[in-house]
Image (cartoon, rainbow, N blue to C red; front, side, top):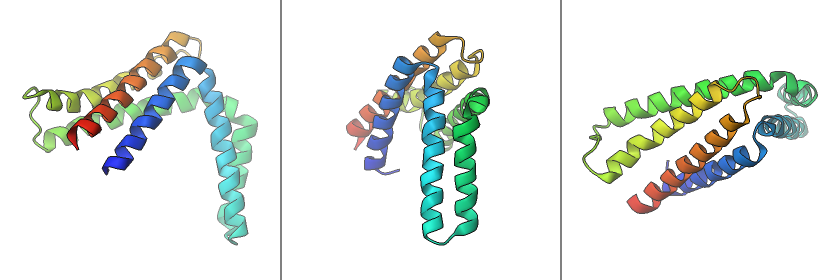
Length: 159
């Protein structure tokens, strides 16, 4: 990932963290609406480009997500949490494979702290009891803001 992509990812993480804090459990409903609308738009563009099979499937899935997305909110939350956990573990493995020594300097500590925070976000989201525990979203939002800040700080400091 180049420097610009890292900065964009950090800003997106900061925005997502703020949304998690403000919207709490409602962010999943917003995400379903955004994904459904995005699939409808992408499907419509594919239909215009005469890619009828793909466009029809994307439009159908988009419509289903908009109509029945609330049924999938809990499943989406657990899948997202699992993905964050796996991503964090893979990130740590990649850091270790790259021979970045832990604890030698602040930069190395920050590099290892980023995947740990990612895994913490995943754990907090995993233990959300069907959307009834708002503090999980607030803590996840705070951790996501911290993650975005760390990525932004290390990107601006390191490059």
